[in-house]
Image (tube, rainbow, N blue to C red; front, side, top):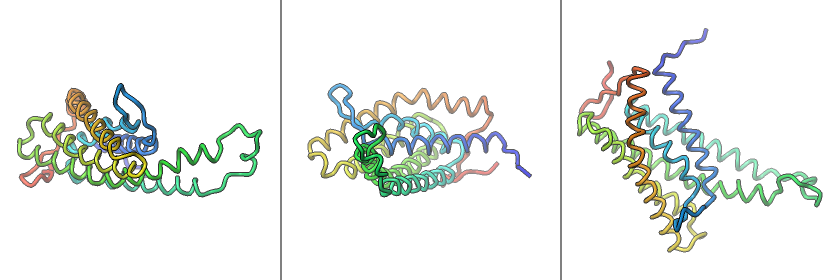
Length: 233
């Protein structure tokens, strides 16, 4: 017999699903660089604002333990995706694809995208764990210290700290030996600067998401004790 999910459980599944999707898409597309004016960025920067918002909502309404579980599930899915991509790269292309009349995907094109994304995935997984647990810790500490006030402070503050770590680690691991040190430092600095601007710009959306969950879905924020643990109602 199927168990009917309540609104709180449905929201958790939705937030977790969106978070994992944004994480994996960012990992897979992250190998492409583009110019934004004079700045060089990875297209992986497109889904990152979504992960910021979702992490904050998970932490705010379900507490750090649930946020950590979703973090580990996301890591597991990244490992799963890495395994599948590795197997796909290792399987040899059919002979028919090597002929001059073949107009489909060639081995060179496939490997350029997916073999390259393996390095991005590994770098992302390492940076992801470090940044996510840092974000959860800082968010919880700020929420406890302010007694649940100043949503903007814990949301923006945790993002700025965690994303400095994330940006430095992932860009270094992903591009070390590929880009010269000057270009690498520029990429790290420019990526982080954009993330700072986006984190500040996301503040209204964080308040909007908070209001929708609390007032429309009628799910109250998690109440924390002095140690940052959720107080069960």
